[in-house]
Image 1 (cartoon, rainbow, N blue to C red):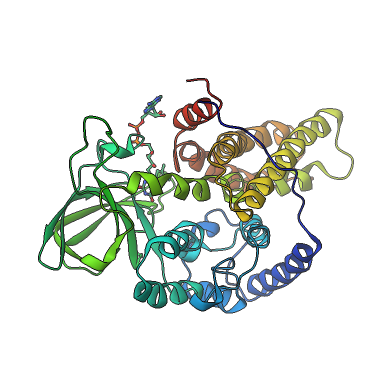
Image 2: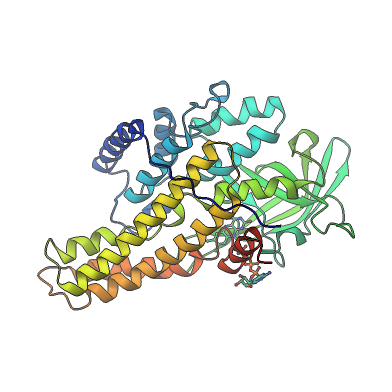
Length: 386
Ligand SMILES: Cc1cc2nc3c(=O)[nH]c(=O)nc-3n(C[C@H](O)[C@H](O)[C@H](O)COP(=O)(O)OP(=O)(O)OC[C@H]3O[C@@H](n4cnc5c(N)ncnc54)[C@H](O)[C@@H]3O)c2cc1C
């Protein structure tokens, strides 16, 4: 069955530009106070509880959520502006970002009232960090092959097994996890998984570090040994999580953070080429900026469609696929375009350091949040091609 594919031609409204100015002023103050360095590789990945609380106090976490739960009832387009400015500035939003982007919206839809009232306002205040427990050894792309078991017991569920590649588990307060509650059925191999809210302080949870090439502790293995999760921490339908997982992925895949992770080397290129670049420099830079502009229009369009209550799963997958390829290619293009510049116009040592970091994080970009091949499968299905 073919699905209609459409990028609504959405532009950011004027109130977004007022907000952008406020965000820039706030970030400039934080930079001046020494909270982070916009040119320092890796700062965007840092966890900074003080900074997250100050962002929460500004009203920039849970921006689109109901006021009743600490949210601010602003639009997805306004949220887009905040995400974009934070990413471009390399601001340390890692602590609150996953909760803001996808865990909060899941809780809003599926958590019981008392949990919403307890957890959502704390997310909005920048106090909570969430991690995503989907991938397991042996089930990454094939999410619905997950084996970590949740077994019904008195008053709750006993969890046994392990998750892997879990970003932020070492600092997270909660995990939103998919566990197996029943075997798959003959007719539906996606059946049998349930989503749970797991308090990471629960006895029986061990978090083991996995380091990235950059030396950062990017992610973890999380081992569950008879950890008890209460009944009221089940999110949504028992055995039916496959229905809710796809809409979570539309939030996860389409935002500007999906093509701006190596962005910080682009201003360096512009600075190095100067106001009158030669033909090769101008052509190379023009191409990169034109592609970025197009990606941005597409990503804004997806934000607008989320605002309109649509589920742009295919469009979000297209943005993530094209966006990650662009950010992956960027460090190499910057290296090519700056290699022959004289030392008077460019500090090669500083740029080399920035490019080295961007090059080391490049391989992960097309894997995290769904691999290129998987996204193309989703797009092909959406277009009725498979
Ligand atoms: C930086 C980073 C952060 C991450 N953070 C998290 C996190 O917080 N929580 C979490 O749950 N997971 C996280 N992941 C895991 C990520 O979602 C998985 O690595 C990803 O889904 C791929 O799964 P896999 O590693 O098991 O590879 P596999 O699924 O084994 O895939 C291996 C290769 O085979 C290809 N392939 C697999 N199936 C198909 C198919 N049907 N058709 C065509 N090609 C196919 C893939 O594209 C890939 O190239 C993170 C990953 C990275 C890199």
